[in-house]
Length: 258
Image (tube, rainbow, N blue to C red; front, side):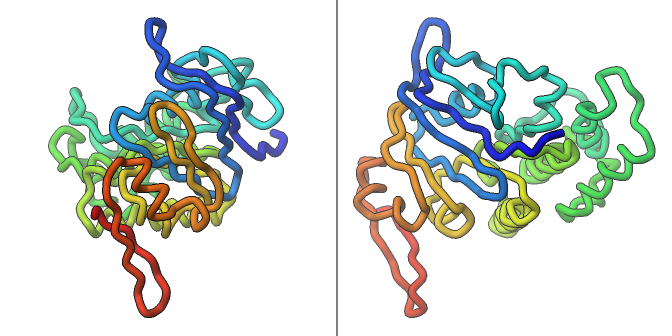
């Protein structure tokens, strides 16, 4: 497989058949970097992610995976290239945690294929990587919301993709597990993967993202290097709220609601 350097949208309009959510969006996720997407509720973040994944067709513009239009790439190949971590959900069937993670291997073994020794090894390795190997045999429906979110991250890692897209990956996690997931994001970019995540916390973006895009009312209001884009003025305009900036004696910056 040839090297794929980015997942990019240009002049994108997106939404649903009866409603356009966003337009004129140009954004790119490069291999080996973390891109944070920030914006208020209802700003179109999740719909944009679904469009970048090919789950929703673009209404205008283009989405390219490397040099190829996303729409020209088969679903099976997309699954080997891009993994998606949705916001945590309760689940319906009592699959065990390791069975959920093994679903990420479908991209490699086919829909009706049986898991191989390698597939099972990868699944257990991803649970171990996230510190939840002890949950392997537990029913997914019986573990906590935070644990379910970690299982979904492990499932995405088991796909062994080139790009990972995460929708508010720490929303249901406690403080310690938030750090665990965000450190994994940093580690993945160090391994050459491209990681796009949405967040309501500009401090996560400031610490863990290389670049950031601010999305408001379906439009990219600003995008670029995290330290350049995340300013008091930009965040106040994005969220229509006061923003307080704290700076430590070591020069580290943190943003708080004003």
